[in-house]
Length: 332
Image (cartoon, rainbow, N blue to C red; front, side):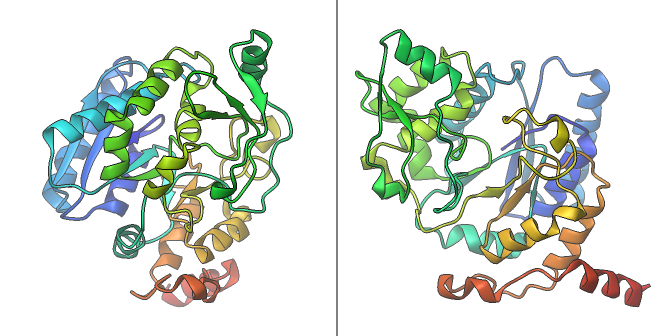
């Protein structure tokens, strides 16, 4: 599932990278985009199904995506409900934006996902420094006495999280940006069935649907604090997507919310993520970005045993930029 926000060619490159005869794609197209964007996406859809053996590329036209308004959350939930109701032969849903890119070729990516014990979500690895202040909306909730600020024990998540616990819901609201799982999540069918049909999950959706301040950033992060959902998650996996707020293009304009655009200068971040078997990286704004070519070239060097043993992950690493440059020169 993808929500493209920029040029169609970036979506095309992403789908071609993930193309497989057992993969189907649902691409959300905003109702208010220009006609040329829609025409380009339709042409890409037809071409991909004819040339790349993709089983289906479905263009879903609905709604208007407005950041921090909850529209992305509603679009994803509606798609999940639709998939459960109408499609039967699927096991995983990978939620992406149009600015993400896989660090592995499709065969290795499938092996990483299919061996998982449960869903992955886009949290930072254990040991990363957490924020020490609550976000504006949680402070507002506390001030209005709609919630109590607490420091609950989230040891099953292998980290402590500053939270607001809603008195009548039984789940916590993750109030830090170290856990932003709604985009870039790898969700099993069992997890999606829980999100759509469980009473607590439905209450959470209805609540966050009306929390008009980045509800998509807190909805799943909050639900995943429920102890009983732990069985649906693979807590041994790393985060599902690597990103940076301090480095990369446009980092100078960072507002502590939007992560930066990765470039070849951030190759060490990509290398470390690949060593830890993180499947995706973001963000990328140009289909011709040199760093995407570097990722494609480097991932070709991996064999079928990539990340096969979680205890030997450090043995797998991307080539250095210098090694890639030498390879390019030799091939020329």
